[in-house]
Length: 219
Image (cartoon, rainbow, N blue to C red; front, side, top):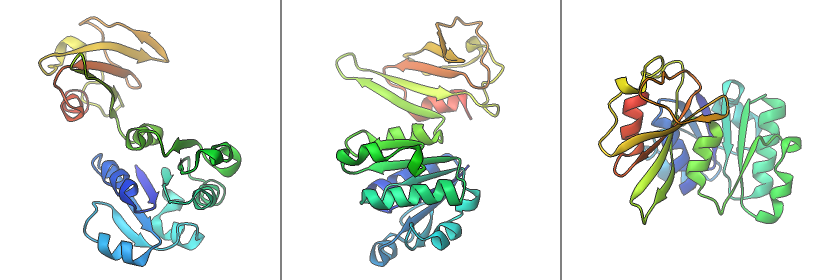
């Protein structure tokens, strides 16, 4: 997947690096020259210094071929302009934009080219990973009192588990498949349940990480 992230603040760098871990082609754009210079070599993503609201810069960043663009600049008006350019001028299929001021959230809609808006008050990194559909395995919830976590992984045509029964997979100790969503319908699967591309698998575990679950179902 090709992704463009606009805004190399702490969040933008985290998002770009998180997307890079899935072997995606990621370009990070930062308007501030000093910030960009400090960051060079400090991110896994390709870095471009320039104004993300400038069509020439967006084209250099690869917006014409991008599958997703994430606008996380510090100003809402900038994120809106970038989103509109990405959708209307570059026809980016998936545009995700950060809302810095909750009072402006009503503007972040399809008219401005925004497919998914994410509030600054939310758990941004996980939500953006899910919104871009770039992360096939996402931690959903950690129940502190129970000491268990809930992890979702989406089966793709290239997943190692596609076509396999759950009984063939070796889950980490203390982990179970609690449900599988297929076509939007939840199922409590047995060991003979065969996974298909598009299935969303919900794993409950007391110790497994997202990486552990991904190794079982994806790699």
